[in-house]
Image 1 (cartoon, rainbow, N blue to C red):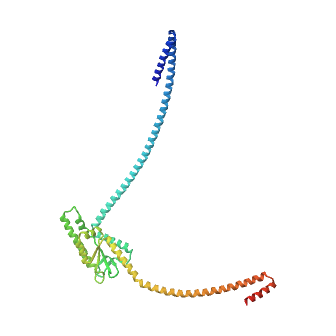
Image 2 (cartoon, rainbow, N blue to C red):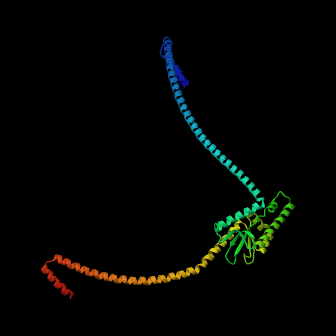
Image 3 (cartoon, rainbow, N blue to C red):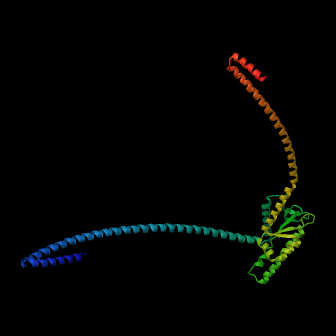
Length: 363
């Protein structure tokens, strides 16, 4: 812009110079050109100074705007950094909490694995397995029939032949007394399903497993099915659902053998279902037992209600008669009250006249 203005001024200077050459003498040209040069130089200096001032002012204003924008950007950056830091901190805290929970879960898993190992060690002993089955059977009976319900079941019951069964159930006829014995054939079952063993070893274990189950069925049938004392059937309780499922799914010959011996194989789930059905049968029998008594009592109650109705009718008639007498007394009382009222409000001469009129009206 500065160069354009200078060019225009030079052009004006040239035109002025040309005009001067035409209008004045050559003697004044030098003097006027000097004064013109001085004036132009002065004007150019003033213009340059103003231009410098304007440029400095614009630069300062631009610098202030840039600083303002930079401050805004810095504030935004700091705000975003603070937000991201808070989010990162929360995420880090959440990660730490989850890590602590994972650590606790890992400890519980370690403890559980220790318990499982100890349980496996317990179940390797036959006596311990027997105790485990008896305790499991007791919990099932208590959960269905309640604690110490001797009228329905008993634990460690001894028969007349001195044999002791884990539990006996006093079911209603025609079922009668049913023996429940807990059995836990585990060793050969585990060997039969162990994939690390060879096929011949697993087949041999399967045969031994079947022999174990049949032996348990024979023992229950011979010891706990007593003619004239117990029912003609008994229950073998397997405390492991897996063994029960294995027998029913893959060893139908054992199921048929149990049918022949009249010994029903049950697991915790199926035993609970069976006992629940028996409990409902017992309740229905008890209810039917008292049905005749309830019917007799209802008939007695009907007779008493008939007597009650007859007496109430008599009382109602008496109340109606008394009510009529009360109405008659009320009418007489109103008449006497009116007469007392007329005595209080009329003269003696008129009273005689009114009494005579009243007597005539009554006649």
